[in-house]
Length: 403
Image 1 (cartoon, rainbow, N blue to C red):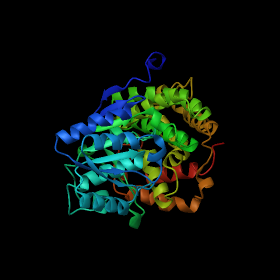
Image 2: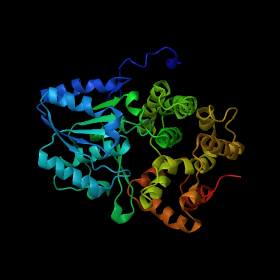
Image 3: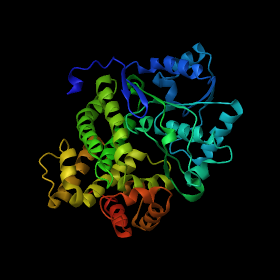
């Protein structure tokens, strides 16, 4: 109901574990953040971005102006890549150490902010590396302050304690989750998201939906995660078609950005399970695969697999997409097919076989799901037992469209 009367040009202060400045114009809060950093004696920061997204979004100039106005020096690392690797993290750490950075600013989607989180830890642990961090060789308890300037409406990383990177030497794509890497400040300004390409509008929003479908159905979920899931799916269902139809309309972007923020908080509470655990091996062996597409290809089969054990919750939260479900186990295939049809109607019309995966890949993907650091933790909280047979079946059922 809020979208009918709230002014999107008001900067709302949302107090999650991170302090989130949300709304059109929120980027101007960088001046307050820079002033606070200076007050704390932090006069050198590193800004992390990809090569291009930060330039056209409108985030760069206000950030630089705020730092310069408050006497905070900066070095810019623009080597963040999609599906970042531990090697690229080590490169960023070296730049930050050489400069003497004492805080990190990530500008972008999940990749720059996740790299900022990783570098923030490693600046406090000079004897560790990206690989030792992501192979869980130590447990960090501290990190330098992080500012997350979010340019997408999907990952939720601006408000959670999770980061992801690939260990290329092992075909691993693990996640880490530590209290010390909550961004201290986050900026969600929908006006900065208007330059997202259509496929990113689509797949970042699908990422948010996956976050809450999983968070609401883990063994460790809670009422808060489920309540947020209900709102996220309703917001995405209503606003994603509008954003795809008119990418310059900021109103649906405001609502999608809010949905993504809620989704990040939801899975920070309820955690994730099968869809993310099975997607990480896909984009580990094929780094060019868009994370949201990987999730979209797997989601229907996951819904089919977990519906018998979580039918009541799924019937509730999926009602905007699949109205009329009762939660009966007999509806599993109906619900899964309806979710797949919804994804295809939005333009997410690829399955694993369209991306070059075959039956011959399933054994290796299943092995990676079970051996990549962190992924067994996700599997352990799935609402059904994540056996080798179940994992293989989800991959097999995701090769082609459901009949």
